[in-house]
Length: 239
Ligand SMILES: C[S@@+](CC[C@H](N)C(=O)[O-])C[C@H]1O[C@@H](n2cnc3c(N)ncnc32)[C@H](O)[C@@H]1O
Image 1 (cartoon, rainbow, N blue to C red):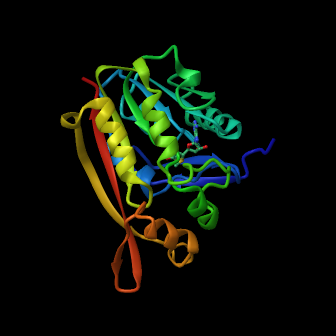
Image 2: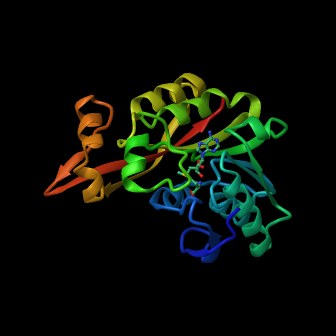
């Protein structure tokens, strides 16, 4: 088992503070920053953070007033690091991290808010980019893991509760949104944040990206010599 060997300075919402990471734990990204910006957390609320990684979004939720935040991650190392980060940040009394897939370790929790930031990047792009050093990417089209998350939510979210769901044009976004509309009802989805980012050149020029584009699974926008992908954060309210 690795011990924390790196630090990461979070300068996003509810920061600044410093996290410990190990080489296989996901480093917070632009998506983490956008998700943090999108969160509406009311005092005392219970938050579930699926795909918690280092624990960053649970810590933001706790600092914004959540009564308790529970994270799950399939990576045992992530859960160990998130638990250690909670201790260092003085948030161990309000956060708890459990190892397992999606909602499986959290069946005893009913949430007011779910942060659905589980891996959603296609496996081949994840491999080229190195964005998932722990090896748990989003499936062949990047939709498989987020759709499995949506379909297994069950009663973990209370009626009237909300899920914050990222989608991106660098995954089969239509399939993720179709599942979200099926589960929450189309009228209960609202886009709350939209941002665009350039794809690193190595990734943009890869055969994996060319194939996913040719298959109509991802949709990137050309601007000059760069390919841009668009991120959206959706607030989905359970009827
Ligand atoms: C995009 S990262 C986000 C991490 C964190 N929320 C952040 O903002 O830095 C996605 C996380 O989902 C985890 N993951 C992938 N498949 C999973 C699954 N089936 N169940 C739980 N977590 C999973 C990965 O290990 C990774 O830590």
